[in-house]
Length: 440
Image (cartoon, rainbow, N blue to C red; front, side, top):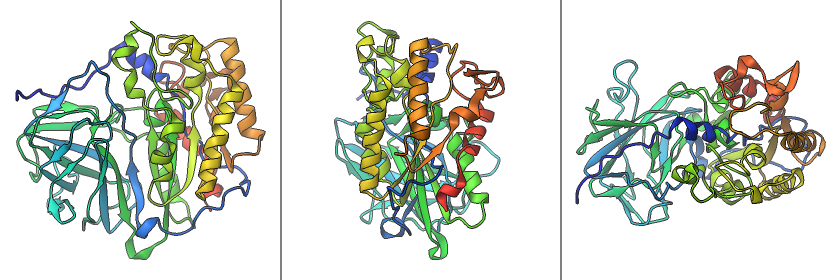
């Protein structure tokens, strides 16, 4: 077969603008607990706790990127330390088996090129004792434990070798990171001669660690849309990263992994459904399944999860009637609240605490989301999140981000430029809005 060099889809400026629309799904844990959930205490299953994770989606039908006899070297950022780790890989949206000839992990080198690894840290990853694995279509895969001591807030390099023609069908298209592509099997190389780069993660799902010295640890999941997925590329300045730093610095708290399950454009109640002929047909599939559909897989299945911060609903309010979604999919505050109640009930059934995040301001945004009617729905949703008593805590992101002189607008110092998505400073302010007492 002819090799097709993977060429990451650089969604044009108009599309990127629309992608931005995906604001919010993370209901950051933090206001007075309602006693509805009693989180399971202690380690995750078998002592493993998540230190990093991501959401994966399918790709648009118009994309035909593929790999063959190539290594993909990807970089992820940890939130808690461990004495060993496991990888979770994914072929969930593949239609054919995913053949991985070799998989390696290592810590990233300090300085040097972005793809270089720290000498002495390279490890071969096995699956049931075997090097490499074939993952059936639609399935995930969990590695054997890897003996690699991993610090908190460290960059972990994951290298996958794909010997056969492999469509790039299971991705996180908004990684806010850089992935390196190279010819042949160079999974164990100290550095690689990259033949291309991408801003996507491929076939990755998560990294779990076994905490050092038997220390108690747990995880919190940030569950949302593009506002949760991130801001600046290559900086690890998502609000979930800032929250992880706050939790590490806090006294008297167990180690807490912070797992980001944000996906740009995601809605609580609907799958991607761009109108026929819309430019969004070229990228909307990357917005992922509706949050109610992905909640069990992306949140409840995470190792060691005790809490989830939900920040979703902006896209449900703003997308319908734009190029991204039909007007027939408009929803009101009552429907969004009903969706929240479902998330809460399912989380509580598993002993997971749910923190509700208020929806941030979006007046004058460049994506076409704002109207007086939509603003009224946002205000109604936020009033219920703050006072409804159904959540175990509240993270008031709206209060943290809004302009005090014009509360419907994003504060200028926190504006990324589209009047909807926060910049790095705004992400830091969001993390500061999460009450750490909810995690004690």
